[in-house]
Image (tube, rainbow, N blue to C red; front, side, top):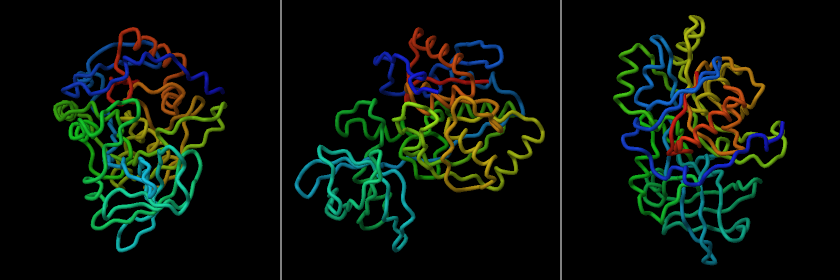
Length: 346
Protein backbone atom coordinates (compact mmCIF):
# COMPACT_ATOMS: atom_id res chain seq x y z
CA UNK A 1 0.00 0.00 0.00
CA UNK A 2 1.48 3.35 -1.06
CA UNK A 3 1.59 6.33 1.28
CA UNK A 4 0.62 8.60 -1.64
CA UNK A 5 -2.78 6.88 -1.65
CA UNK A 6 -3.54 8.83 1.55
CA UNK A 7 -2.73 12.22 0.08
CA UNK A 8 -5.24 14.96 -0.61
CA UNK A 9 -5.20 18.67 -1.45
CA UNK A 10 -5.71 20.75 1.68
CA UNK A 11 -6.86 24.39 1.26
CA UNK A 12 -4.67 26.31 3.76
CA UNK A 13 -7.53 28.63 4.71
CA UNK A 14 -9.40 25.67 6.25
CA UNK A 15 -6.66 24.99 8.82
CA UNK A 16 -8.15 26.23 12.10
CA UNK A 17 -5.90 28.66 13.96
CA UNK A 18 -8.14 28.99 17.02
CA UNK A 19 -10.93 26.81 18.40
CA UNK A 20 -14.61 27.65 18.15
CA UNK A 21 -16.11 29.07 21.35
CA UNK A 22 -17.89 27.42 23.02
CA UNK A 23 -16.05 24.22 22.20
CA UNK A 24 -19.20 22.20 21.57
CA UNK A 25 -20.30 24.66 18.84
CA UNK A 26 -17.88 23.03 16.40
CA UNK A 27 -19.39 21.22 13.46
CA UNK A 28 -19.87 17.46 13.58
CA UNK A 29 -19.80 15.21 10.55
CA UNK A 30 -21.50 11.87 11.24
CA UNK A 31 -20.26 8.99 9.08
CA UNK A 32 -22.20 5.71 8.94
CA UNK A 33 -19.88 2.89 7.92
CA UNK A 34 -22.49 0.31 6.90
CA UNK A 35 -24.88 2.67 5.13
CA UNK A 36 -22.07 4.72 3.54
CA UNK A 37 -24.01 7.81 4.58
CA UNK A 38 -22.93 11.22 5.90
CA UNK A 39 -24.81 13.76 8.03
CA UNK A 40 -23.86 17.26 9.13
CA UNK A 41 -24.63 18.40 12.66
CA UNK A 42 -23.16 20.39 15.58
CA UNK A 43 -21.02 18.70 18.23
CA UNK A 44 -23.39 19.71 21.05
CA UNK A 45 -25.91 17.31 19.47
CA UNK A 46 -23.64 14.27 19.76
CA UNK A 47 -25.78 12.80 22.55
CA UNK A 48 -28.53 12.12 19.98
CA UNK A 49 -26.19 9.67 18.21
CA UNK A 50 -25.16 7.66 21.25
CA UNK A 51 -27.43 5.10 22.87
CA UNK A 52 -28.12 4.30 26.52
CA UNK A 53 -25.54 1.78 27.74
CA UNK A 54 -22.93 2.88 25.20
CA UNK A 55 -19.44 3.21 26.67
CA UNK A 56 -17.51 6.40 25.84
CA UNK A 57 -13.75 6.18 26.48
CA UNK A 58 -11.62 9.34 26.60
CA UNK A 59 -7.91 10.08 27.06
CA UNK A 60 -7.10 11.95 30.30
CA UNK A 61 -3.52 12.91 29.44
CA UNK A 62 -2.51 16.50 30.17
CA UNK A 63 -0.24 18.55 27.91
CA UNK A 64 2.89 19.99 29.48
CA UNK A 65 4.55 23.20 28.32
CA UNK A 66 7.08 21.10 26.48
CA UNK A 67 8.34 23.59 23.86
CA UNK A 68 11.36 25.52 25.19
CA UNK A 69 13.43 28.23 23.54
CA UNK A 70 17.13 28.33 24.36
CA UNK A 71 20.57 29.19 23.05
CA UNK A 72 23.65 27.21 22.17
CA UNK A 73 26.87 28.05 23.99
CA UNK A 74 27.87 29.80 20.76
CA UNK A 75 24.78 32.00 20.96
CA UNK A 76 22.69 30.37 18.24
CA UNK A 77 18.96 30.04 18.86
CA UNK A 78 17.50 26.60 19.56
CA UNK A 79 13.99 25.27 20.11
CA UNK A 80 13.56 22.02 22.03
CA UNK A 81 10.37 19.95 22.25
CA UNK A 82 10.48 17.47 25.14
CA UNK A 83 8.82 14.21 24.09
CA UNK A 84 9.12 11.74 26.96
CA UNK A 85 11.43 10.91 29.88
CA UNK A 86 13.72 7.92 29.50
CA UNK A 87 13.27 6.67 33.09
CA UNK A 88 16.54 8.05 34.41
CA UNK A 89 15.81 9.68 37.75
CA UNK A 90 18.04 11.28 40.38
CA UNK A 91 16.47 12.61 43.59
CA UNK A 92 13.10 11.89 41.90
CA UNK A 93 14.01 14.12 38.96
CA UNK A 94 13.59 12.88 35.37
CA UNK A 95 16.96 13.66 33.80
CA UNK A 96 17.17 11.87 30.45
CA UNK A 97 14.66 12.82 27.77
CA UNK A 98 13.86 12.22 24.15
CA UNK A 99 13.44 15.54 22.40
CA UNK A 100 13.12 17.21 19.03
CA UNK A 101 15.74 19.92 18.48
CA UNK A 102 15.21 22.67 15.93
CA UNK A 103 18.14 24.93 15.06
CA UNK A 104 20.04 26.18 12.01
CA UNK A 105 22.89 23.66 12.42
CA UNK A 106 22.83 20.29 14.17
CA UNK A 107 23.95 20.55 17.79
CA UNK A 108 27.23 18.88 18.71
CA UNK A 109 27.23 15.88 21.00
CA UNK A 110 28.20 17.02 24.49
CA UNK A 111 27.20 20.63 23.84
CA UNK A 112 24.85 22.57 26.12
CA UNK A 113 21.59 24.34 25.39
CA UNK A 114 20.89 27.15 27.84
CA UNK A 115 17.26 27.91 28.71
CA UNK A 116 17.78 30.00 31.85
CA UNK A 117 20.17 30.66 34.76
CA UNK A 118 19.42 27.28 36.39
CA UNK A 119 17.94 25.36 33.47
CA UNK A 120 19.92 23.77 30.65
CA UNK A 121 20.25 20.58 28.60
CA UNK A 122 23.25 18.56 27.47
CA UNK A 123 22.98 16.92 24.05
CA UNK A 124 23.88 13.24 24.50
CA UNK A 125 23.17 11.53 21.18
CA UNK A 126 21.20 11.63 17.95
CA UNK A 127 18.64 8.83 17.66
CA UNK A 128 17.45 9.41 14.11
CA UNK A 129 14.34 10.91 12.49
CA UNK A 130 14.98 14.22 14.23
CA UNK A 131 14.93 12.72 17.73
CA UNK A 132 17.73 13.43 20.19
CA UNK A 133 18.56 12.23 23.69
CA UNK A 134 19.28 15.05 26.14
CA UNK A 135 20.05 15.37 29.83
CA UNK A 136 18.27 18.12 31.73
CA UNK A 137 19.76 20.15 34.57
CA UNK A 138 17.35 22.18 36.71
CA UNK A 139 16.37 23.07 40.26
CA UNK A 140 13.04 22.20 41.86
CA UNK A 141 10.08 20.51 40.17
CA UNK A 142 10.38 20.14 36.39
CA UNK A 143 6.73 20.97 35.70
CA UNK A 144 7.12 24.23 37.62
CA UNK A 145 10.29 24.99 35.64
CA UNK A 146 8.44 24.33 32.38
CA UNK A 147 5.58 26.57 33.46
CA UNK A 148 8.19 29.35 33.68
CA UNK A 149 10.28 28.62 30.59
CA UNK A 150 8.13 26.45 28.33
CA UNK A 151 5.35 27.12 25.87
CA UNK A 152 2.33 25.16 24.72
CA UNK A 153 3.56 22.65 22.10
CA UNK A 154 1.24 23.70 19.30
CA UNK A 155 1.65 21.97 15.94
CA UNK A 156 3.59 23.98 13.32
CA UNK A 157 0.48 24.61 11.18
CA UNK A 158 -0.97 26.77 13.99
CA UNK A 159 0.81 30.08 13.57
CA UNK A 160 1.68 32.26 16.54
CA UNK A 161 3.74 35.44 16.96
CA UNK A 162 6.09 34.68 19.84
CA UNK A 163 4.33 34.28 23.17
CA UNK A 164 1.19 36.13 22.12
CA UNK A 165 -1.93 34.08 22.94
CA UNK A 166 0.17 31.71 25.08
CA UNK A 167 -2.20 31.90 28.06
CA UNK A 168 -5.18 31.29 25.79
CA UNK A 169 -3.50 28.37 24.06
CA UNK A 170 -2.57 26.80 27.39
CA UNK A 171 -6.31 26.66 28.09
CA UNK A 172 -7.49 25.97 24.54
CA UNK A 173 -5.03 23.11 23.93
CA UNK A 174 -6.19 21.11 26.97
CA UNK A 175 -9.25 18.86 27.16
CA UNK A 176 -11.67 19.00 30.08
CA UNK A 177 -10.58 15.43 30.88
CA UNK A 178 -6.89 16.36 31.33
CA UNK A 179 -5.60 14.95 34.63
CA UNK A 180 -2.27 13.14 34.15
CA UNK A 181 0.51 15.36 32.85
CA UNK A 182 2.84 13.88 30.27
CA UNK A 183 1.74 14.73 26.71
CA UNK A 184 3.68 16.66 24.08
CA UNK A 185 0.47 17.19 22.07
CA UNK A 186 -3.22 17.25 22.88
CA UNK A 187 -5.62 14.36 22.18
CA UNK A 188 -7.57 16.78 20.02
CA UNK A 189 -10.83 14.86 19.58
CA UNK A 190 -11.48 15.57 23.26
CA UNK A 191 -11.21 19.33 22.76
CA UNK A 192 -14.85 19.52 21.59
CA UNK A 193 -16.34 18.33 24.86
CA UNK A 194 -17.89 20.64 27.45
CA UNK A 195 -19.40 19.88 30.83
CA UNK A 196 -22.91 20.31 29.42
CA UNK A 197 -22.28 17.72 26.69
CA UNK A 198 -20.95 15.26 29.30
CA UNK A 199 -23.99 15.92 31.52
CA UNK A 200 -26.36 15.14 28.62
CA UNK A 201 -24.52 11.93 27.80
CA UNK A 202 -24.59 10.72 31.40
CA UNK A 203 -28.27 11.66 31.70
CA UNK A 204 -28.92 9.51 28.64
CA UNK A 205 -27.18 6.53 30.26
CA UNK A 206 -23.81 6.67 28.45
CA UNK A 207 -20.97 5.53 30.71
CA UNK A 208 -17.74 7.56 30.63
CA UNK A 209 -14.40 5.79 31.13
CA UNK A 210 -10.87 7.19 30.97
CA UNK A 211 -7.58 5.78 29.78
CA UNK A 212 -4.21 7.51 29.44
CA UNK A 213 -1.90 7.79 26.47
CA UNK A 214 0.80 10.43 26.73
CA UNK A 215 0.75 11.75 23.19
CA UNK A 216 4.21 12.03 21.67
CA UNK A 217 5.95 11.74 18.36
CA UNK A 218 4.35 8.36 17.67
CA UNK A 219 1.07 10.17 17.06
CA UNK A 220 2.32 13.13 15.02
CA UNK A 221 5.48 11.74 13.40
CA UNK A 222 5.41 12.15 9.60
CA UNK A 223 5.49 9.03 7.44
CA UNK A 224 8.82 9.15 5.60
CA UNK A 225 8.66 5.83 3.76
CA UNK A 226 6.88 5.16 0.46
CA UNK A 227 5.13 1.97 1.52
CA UNK A 228 2.68 2.17 4.43
CA UNK A 229 3.66 -1.21 5.84
CA UNK A 230 7.29 -0.13 6.30
CA UNK A 231 6.47 2.74 8.68
CA UNK A 232 7.40 2.11 12.32
CA UNK A 233 5.47 3.89 15.07
CA UNK A 234 7.49 5.48 17.86
CA UNK A 235 6.43 4.13 21.24
CA UNK A 236 4.11 6.07 23.57
CA UNK A 237 3.25 5.32 27.20
CA UNK A 238 -0.30 4.27 28.15
CA UNK A 239 -2.22 3.25 31.28
CA UNK A 240 -5.58 1.63 32.00
CA UNK A 241 -6.77 1.22 35.58
CA UNK A 242 -7.86 -2.26 36.75
CA UNK A 243 -11.38 -0.88 37.29
CA UNK A 244 -11.58 0.45 33.72
CA UNK A 245 -10.23 -2.83 32.39
CA UNK A 246 -12.94 -4.76 34.20
CA UNK A 247 -15.66 -2.41 32.93
CA UNK A 248 -14.41 -2.82 29.35
CA UNK A 249 -14.32 -6.61 29.66
CA UNK A 250 -17.88 -6.62 31.01
CA UNK A 251 -19.05 -4.23 28.29
CA UNK A 252 -17.65 -6.52 25.59
CA UNK A 253 -19.29 -9.56 27.20
CA UNK A 254 -22.62 -7.72 27.26
CA UNK A 255 -22.26 -6.63 23.62
CA UNK A 256 -22.23 -2.92 24.42
CA UNK A 257 -20.79 -0.48 21.91
CA UNK A 258 -17.45 1.01 22.96
CA UNK A 259 -16.88 4.44 21.43
CA UNK A 260 -13.33 5.80 21.50
CA UNK A 261 -12.75 9.53 21.68
CA UNK A 262 -9.67 10.05 19.56
CA UNK A 263 -7.13 7.93 17.73
CA UNK A 264 -4.94 7.79 20.85
CA UNK A 265 -7.77 6.15 22.79
CA UNK A 266 -8.31 3.71 19.91
CA UNK A 267 -4.67 2.64 20.07
CA UNK A 268 -4.79 2.18 23.86
CA UNK A 269 -7.91 0.01 23.69
CA UNK A 270 -6.68 -2.16 20.85
CA UNK A 271 -3.22 -2.54 22.44
CA UNK A 272 -4.79 -3.53 25.77
CA UNK A 273 -6.96 -6.14 24.09
CA UNK A 274 -4.02 -7.85 22.41
CA UNK A 275 -1.37 -7.73 25.15
CA UNK A 276 -3.58 -7.66 28.31
CA UNK A 277 -1.17 -5.19 29.96
CA UNK A 278 -2.68 -2.36 32.00
CA UNK A 279 0.32 -0.12 31.36
CA UNK A 280 3.39 0.05 29.19
CA UNK A 281 4.27 1.31 25.74
CA UNK A 282 2.32 0.99 22.54
CA UNK A 283 3.81 0.99 19.05
CA UNK A 284 0.56 -0.16 17.42
CA UNK A 285 0.25 1.11 13.85
CA UNK A 286 -3.30 0.80 12.52
CA UNK A 287 -3.85 1.03 8.77
CA UNK A 288 -6.36 -0.49 6.30
CA UNK A 289 -6.61 -4.22 6.77
CA UNK A 290 -6.50 -4.02 10.56
CA UNK A 291 -9.29 -5.91 12.37
CA UNK A 292 -10.72 -3.88 15.27
CA UNK A 293 -11.49 -5.91 18.38
CA UNK A 294 -12.73 -3.31 20.89
CA UNK A 295 -13.75 -0.09 19.17
CA UNK A 296 -17.27 0.10 17.75
CA UNK A 297 -17.43 3.87 17.21
CA UNK A 298 -14.96 6.71 17.03
CA UNK A 299 -14.86 10.47 17.58
CA UNK A 300 -12.02 12.12 15.73
CA UNK A 301 -10.86 15.31 14.00
CA UNK A 302 -9.92 15.89 10.36
CA UNK A 303 -6.31 14.80 9.90
CA UNK A 304 -3.28 15.74 7.83
CA UNK A 305 -2.67 14.15 4.43
CA UNK A 306 -0.40 11.08 4.44
CA UNK A 307 -0.59 10.83 8.24
CA UNK A 308 -0.88 7.69 10.39
CA UNK A 309 -4.06 9.22 11.85
CA UNK A 310 -5.70 9.39 8.43
CA UNK A 311 -4.62 5.78 7.85
CA UNK A 312 -6.20 4.73 11.17
CA UNK A 313 -9.60 6.26 10.44
CA UNK A 314 -9.42 4.80 6.92
CA UNK A 315 -8.90 1.38 8.49
CA UNK A 316 -12.00 1.89 10.64
CA UNK A 317 -14.43 3.35 8.10
CA UNK A 318 -12.89 2.31 4.81
CA UNK A 319 -10.55 4.47 2.75
CA UNK A 320 -13.11 5.22 0.02
CA UNK A 321 -15.75 6.44 2.49
CA UNK A 322 -13.24 8.52 4.48
CA UNK A 323 -11.95 10.26 1.37
CA UNK A 324 -15.52 10.90 0.27
CA UNK A 325 -16.15 12.46 3.68
CA UNK A 326 -13.00 14.60 3.42
CA UNK A 327 -14.00 15.87 -0.03
CA UNK A 328 -17.40 16.83 1.36
CA UNK A 329 -15.78 18.49 4.38
CA UNK A 330 -13.61 20.61 2.10
CA UNK A 331 -16.58 21.53 -0.11
CA UNK A 332 -18.60 22.57 2.95
CA UNK A 333 -15.61 24.39 4.45
CA UNK A 334 -15.20 22.40 7.61
CA UNK A 335 -12.32 23.50 9.85
CA UNK A 336 -9.39 21.08 9.83
CA UNK A 337 -6.76 19.69 12.22
CA UNK A 338 -6.19 20.25 15.95
CA UNK A 339 -8.49 23.25 16.52
CA UNK A 340 -10.91 22.17 13.80
CA UNK A 341 -14.23 20.36 13.58
CA UNK A 342 -15.13 16.81 14.56
CA UNK A 343 -16.18 13.56 12.93
CA UNK A 344 -18.25 10.78 14.54
CA UNK A 345 -17.83 7.40 12.84
CA UNK A 346 -20.54 4.83 13.65
